Image 1 (tube, rainbow, N blue to C red):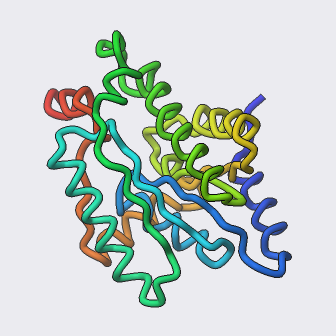
Image 2 (tube, rainbow, N blue to C red):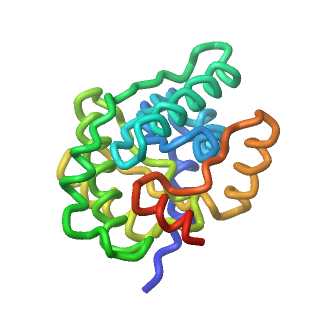
Amino acid sequence: MKVNYAEIFDDEIKTVSKLDKRPELLLHACCAPCASYVLEELREHFRITVYFFNPNIFPEQEHNRRFSELENFLKKIDQERDIDLIYEKYSPLEFAHCSAGLGSEPEGGARCFQCYDLRLSKTAEKARELKSDYFTTTLTISPHKNSARINETGGALAEVYGVKYLFSDFKKNSGFKRSAELSREYGLYRQDYCGCEFSVKRSVSE
């Protein structure tokens, strides 16, 4: 049975909006364009810390460019310095380990699932360390990502780490369209491949 994660998200926001103060949310972000709409949607309801952990991004120059773009975007939209940002040092060996033997897998397949697991596991671990009330990711805004698998992974990790996972499907309700509009408005760099070396090869071949 297909789960409507956008509906679950809306229900959770209704609950959060009734609280006396905004809960702490650790938001895994892969890049500025994906974070743009997600932050617009969430910042009214949560006290947000953005978490940049993306060892899959290749090459290192691209990884650094995406972080810099995210950092600069936050400076533009967050004059009150209400949003915190945590940067995890580039660690491509972590992705190499989790994707070993999966180089021939198609985009959106087992290799991508391992990548979701790696990034969300680290996010959940960090959320527990920070004593965050929730954790989630911007990844569900992409129409190319498997939102069901991302949410299933997040929900399972919530049980392991004892931090509530915010289920989402950010691309719904014109979320992806809005992220494109915000990217144009702020002149954000929009990459033409997901991030890893395998997606680079696919992008070039297409």
